[in-house]
Length: 132
Figure (tube, rainbow, N blue to C red):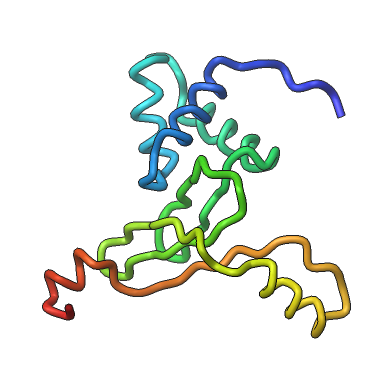
């Protein structure tokens, strides 16, 4: 594979994601990056997000009913999605190793990674709805 040429715009996109906890869409990243690079195109942001995902430097969180979201935390972890407001929250304390070992014992193949998305109602929405 050829050496990847350094890009200030790509580095800015990665830095932006690493500083966030809100799991933004490509459009949200684009809005932020345009402050520093006013001439950047949305296509450039999408291409760099795809490349950073492919390189394993960020995570893409696909959605069934909305745009993909991005996470600057590349270390494998899970997510919680609020079904009311759509907020995505990192879930770091899931016993992934034991889950993958359990899966491997029942599966004829090699389990290399695992991403789990939990769905429910976040604390803020639950309080608004009087659920808690």
